Length: 171
Image (tube, rainbow, N blue to C red; front, side):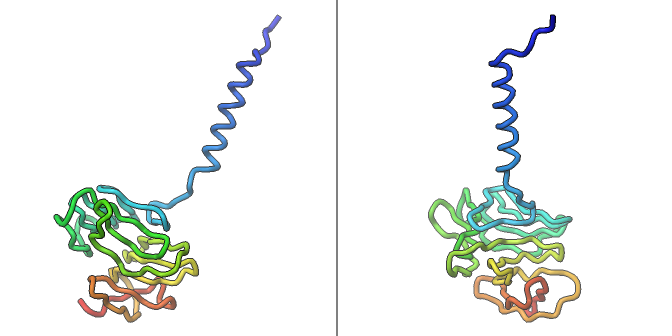
């Protein structure tokens, strides 16, 4: 006569199955090229898109690489240590060392669902919840004919109509 599974065995199986299903349902579906409001990159962490790497380096410099060539950087290397890049819920992209601001995109607005995107055209862009571009590195490659407004912090922004088509006019 075959023995049937005991109650503790069945209970354990059900609990493990429920836990596995719950973890699959609650795991955030985030792309490796996107940083959502409230998320951050610590030292050595990065976003990637094909040959492009947007990395918060251990020396506190935020750098965009095309293969191994740096094409954009905040120039904050050596200014602090243990820096963290945060995409804030107010739309501001900020490098912090502890509570001290090392660099910012100066795009703070009202609270919303902003996100930073490393795009296929190599441009790094902050979008608002309506998918309007509010800031960009201006590092895109390919055909684009949009006016970029340079900021004093070495970054650039374009109108919402520009969204995915950025061109840096001031080298």
